[in-house]
Length: 377
Image (cartoon, rainbow, N blue to C red; front, side):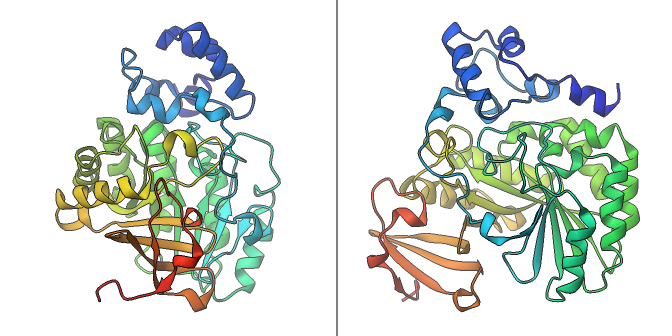
């Protein structure tokens, strides 16, 4: 079966799901309410990673809708993406980087998605004419790289992806291009059953202009033999692979589990890049966000169990002001540093705030306690 037919055979209704996971009538009704707001898609490959006997299975939590998604705490656009949108499907928040939202579709709809406002739903934030985005990039010489995301760009046909790469290849000031994709984790068959994609990647990943694939593995059980094979094929195409994970309650909020993930990623040739603090997204925050007071010790415990490239990741939150590194705790004080700033004046700035109980985002901390600081003093 080709990858497109297999993806079309995914689980998309509570009735189908119930036959696999033996949902109670109450659970099924709850899922029915959730999917009216945010759709469900579970590839059968990924469904088979779930232990149907364990209601707290971490893979299940990542992909199966929960009644907790009816919570409206938080907001949909926590990173200010809409205010950085320059045209349909094009964002320009950081001077050197253009972000292209190539599609609203994913192989699997993760329940913790920070773009919950648009994935699987009609939305004006999605690209409709790539050439318009390319012209903007062409005219802004400060842009040195493009991140193609979505949704998941690898659910697009290979020829569509070729169109992106061939057009970007004509822009001389671009130094590298990244694809953000979760298909190696949720649907590796996109890569293993269609050699045209890796052939295309090999064609455009050159010594003077590398392609990067940024994956999104969140739990060590996602690194199956099939997932590793998909990663190997991407790497054989001369593409460098990095991983962005999210610290998620009930999934990887354990130093042992998180370090296992990081070490297995390195063993698979994938460099840990970021571990992100879960954003306070509406219908996500309540069930997934880990407070700073719990998360920082988990991160430090995981790092202590790693060595070499597996411990080189950055723990950060992707805030409307920029990517802010979460450095650590001292007594009741939490320390931060701007890793990447929307406003140049903030670049590299250290600051601290008094830690408040239950806080899991910068906006939860009082600005009155902020002070520029050297955390080593």
